[in-house]
Image (cartoon, rainbow, N blue to C red; front, side, top):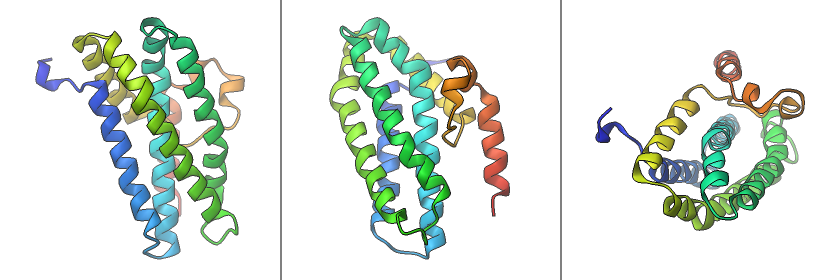
Length: 184
């Protein structure tokens, strides 16, 4: 692999944040039919789950290992992921006709933005300071590969019933993608 084939993790994360912000701006415009809002919300949910799966599998272990006070930092990030997971689960089942859909959607957007800002201001710079360019490139490549096969839906009890390595296997992502493709 040449250097041009690498995707630096800092760039991958920045692109993820920007892509989510674009979806959020479209949702906040309140344009389009209710079904389109649900599709956009589902897309945002799917992207958040894929992003967090990849982060938890590759980025967070590097932060724990290389960043001073990395364990505390990762614990905070994972706590935020778990807190937002509840909103994701609600949004997965709520349609735009549900009386709490808009409130949950706006809470998710606000919480995701806060979480992304935390990562941009603390986790990302500290990771960049602590890793070589080669490591950052390797992490970026791993993130992109993992996101291709990662789960697209929050799984309610997966982290409590399976070892973490099994939760992150490609099988869950494959099943989610089949489910997404046949969903009415």
